[in-house]
Length: 79
Image (cartoon, rainbow, N blue to C red):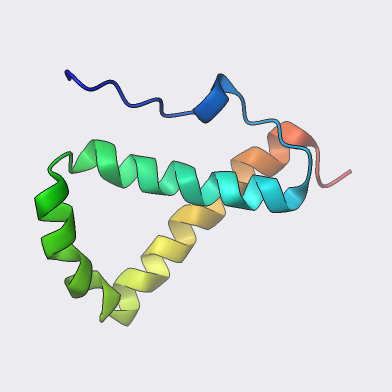
């Protein structure tokens, strides 16, 4: 891959607040999509397909939730 995408921004999952952790989870999910489909034009073309499909939106939510669970574990949010 010529354009190296940093999959973990700042190389850390540690955040100051749970809100920042949630924002990081969304960013990580988006980076996963970008790395999976590196063609920006194709991502734009596909966006209306999933934007109008409830099942796909639920999967997106589950992906972000999985990323957030990892971040929460790293930050010991559940102490």
